[in-house]
Length: 325
Ligand SMILES: Nc1ncnc2c1ncn2[C@@H]1O[C@H](COP(=O)(O)OP(=O)(O)OP(=O)(O)O)[C@@H](O)[C@H]1O
Image (cartoon, rainbow, N blue to C red; front, side, top):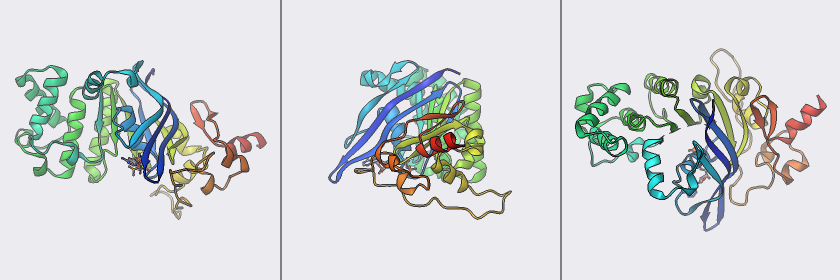
């Protein structure tokens, strides 16, 4: 698999009256062609801001302070806005957490999808309508001819979510950024959506970045997982490796907090809370919550080191234990 997306040293701040919220801090991450990468972490860890930064959709008071994003070798930061807009519609698509607000309330859902196909895929009105209905069938919208003529407010939340996915997939994007795509959906629909995402990546070679809180979803469909804590990337590994051999204490805590039907254990909540991102502690931002904290964790940020092939972690405590084992 070759790299499709390469994020290097990405830092994003939001300037507010109290200071700068350091939402994403020097992140390096790659996503390969045909791969599903899960991006996990507690609320406020910077997952959505990372997706918006990829699409160059950080708006004031937000600002990309450093870093670059390359897609298929192209530096997205240097593209003129018009080219970036085309890139967003055709090659990189996003499914957001809030489908109802992302859809245009004034247009029928069918019209929204056909318009996208006419603008970004150059289809005629008739071709676009045919493909739009195919897409609605693909995401298992019942009675698609009828639903196509309805407005977002006439559809349930789950159906709006599937319409968003149909829109995102309509132009066969090479990269799909899916931000909590199954939140609020009932279990059977959520399972169908996940199947659909897996099918997309297998059939078309599209890469998917799946932003989620749900490690169960990650275990089900992701190939690799990247873990964020308070704006920093702390670990990245193939999915099985991450669940069986988590290296970072934060990842260990996340894994311990997953409910398991086959184990009668008491779930352990993650101790402490995410530090403020305004003037956050220097060094590792997990230091205030971590049982392995040493003096240097509070002073300098641990570098990413290889824990196993393809498995990297940023933790002085891990390095120390590995040396002494
Ligand atoms: N427009 C904004 N203005 C100010 N702060 C923002 C803005 N957008 C995001 N942030 C801050 O950036 C940080 C990261 O937010 P982000 O939405 O990326 O977290 P997340 O990991 O996606 O959380 P969740 O899982 O709850 O969606 C948070 O502290 C958030 O308050």
